[in-house]
Structure formats: structure tokens, C-alpha cells
Image (cartoon, rainbow, N blue to C red):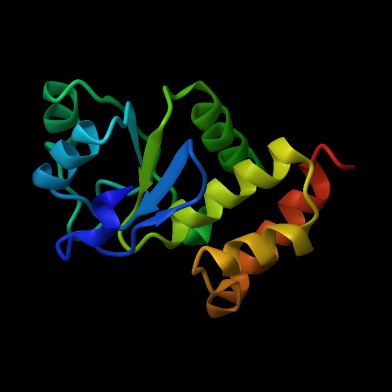
Length: 157
């Protein structure tokens, strides 16, 4: 996705042909996503977060994007919330842009989705995440949760 070439778009990483993750997006970046063929946006930010764009859904829908907001707080990530996000990713028209404030939560959920759908081990998904530019060790809590969830729910098990 060419969004990563734009200086205005921060923390954009293409996970595969169906999923790209990013930090907070602007209206111009939503337009750019549409221009590049993206069909949907999944926003993992909570309305209480500083910088939450309260009119993002309206802006995305005006552009023809399918839009979903599932608030994911780092302190509240658990198996049930993750199952809800994974189910939503399954149902989103692809390609999809998943975002949060910095791209960390979006990356976590995207990599959990990929790992569980492709039957990958935690080690395999950590390698893929590193290749995509994610440092899983930067957030031990998130790394531990990814390892737990993938070990428990991956189709490889």
C-alpha cells in the first residue's frame, strides 16, 4: 500500500494482501486508501482516547468504506474481546485497513488473525511480525498475550 510512502501516514505496515495496519488516519489518508482499492476500516481506538476522531465513521462511509469501531484498550485485552475483533476481521470486505493510535494494537490483532487463520505457531508469527517491522519485544504484555492467544486458538493446535 502506498500509504506508507506518504509522510502524513505514520506507522503503516502491510501485513498481507488483505490487511494493512496503521496509526491514526486522516480524512486524506482514508481517501488515499479508497483510491488504492481498500474496502473497509477497522478502528480499534476508544472514544475516550485523546485524538479519537469522532466523525471518522461518517468520513469513511461518505467515501464508500465499510467502517467498524471496536474499542480495544491495552489493559482490557482478553480472549473474548480478541475473538470479537477476529470475527469482525473475518467479515470485513478486503482489503482492510486496521488502525489505532500508534499501530500497536492494530498490529497485534492483525497478526493474531493471520496466525490463527493460517495455523501458525507463536514463533512463526513473531518472525513474520519482525519481517514486517514490528518489534514484539517492545511491549512484553502484548507479546505475551499474542503468544497465549495463538497457542490456544491457532488452527495448528
